[in-house]
Image (cartoon, rainbow, N blue to C red; front, side, top):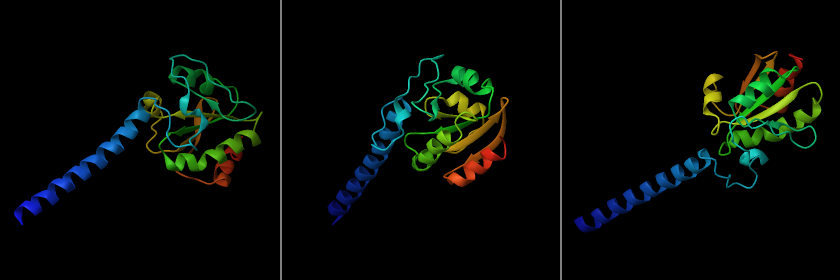
Length: 167
């Protein structure tokens, strides 16, 4: 009986350790810039990370991709018009949930508002600088100053209300 109990305990430890390792492996691979393994991840998951690389404009009126801190400053803080930035992560379920709303609002407010996306795993300094504590977080900038902030899986109408009240 002691041998059976020992076998069960060893098996349980191996299973738990395996689950922990698989979870860490997936997150650390993404954090190092690996491609997202989920097919419906935002298309910006494989953005360039070269310091000083230009922001990548999407086709049409969709969001722009902000690859790093230097680009953030030139693209967002000196934009000349209001800018909403989506701080997101490839592994974040709520980020994927609001992505279609963010994309639709980028099209809806084209010409009056810029919309940007920044991958939090690739831009830790920017996340810390703007005190981003949960994902997704939407910051609305006007003249380089934060005038609106939403965190979590908020609805399209709530995002539009934040934008409308600051345009």
